[in-house]
Length: 301
Image (cartoon, rainbow, N blue to C red):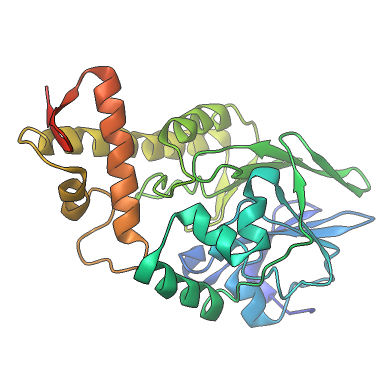
């Protein structure tokens, strides 16, 4: 389980390295975090690259999942002989395939297709032995190296970031132009926005995302990227309001595609569009910006 990562291991501090994934950690890959203490070494979010390369640069004593999405759990089976930790709210997605599909809310043909994808491409292995942690839990790795969990829900119920000295791991608050992903049945738009406000207060020298951006140096750059990332929610909301100048159903909104571009084809796209539209419309109604003119049909006010 020892692999030579060479230049793809970027050392940020004496104890923290990033195992940089293919294409800057673009999905389905990702950027895993390796944290070395004097007593233990942990790997946060073992990506498909970690599995494909045959492991980490050093032996690993434990794996931590930031949340229960397939791309963050690809190495859970590969490291099946070490302890596994995830926020207690996301335990179902780690411990069984049924739990993972419940996180996404998939059924029928979409579920069958995605189950095969997570098995074939992401090496999904249920880990019923996984242990749950809660917000603020500290993993003491020895020698003054600590990993502190920070609960940042919205992407999933248990989605968490981690403080490790001068490094903050953002996981899927990935600061990409795509914007926040909150389209699963276990996602929540309001929780995601609250997490974006919360994480804005984090002070670090390095911020690390699982996808694309990778390592961000300096708080000023981080805040600038975070604010741009956050603003995508408002742009989506405004676009949906404009679309509802004429009456539409949630299904028609999902078919219009406000989250993904029309050419994107993945098993979960339709459900993500549907769920996202539902949450935005619910917000519009609470704000008095839209109304249900007849059962299942909405129009902006």
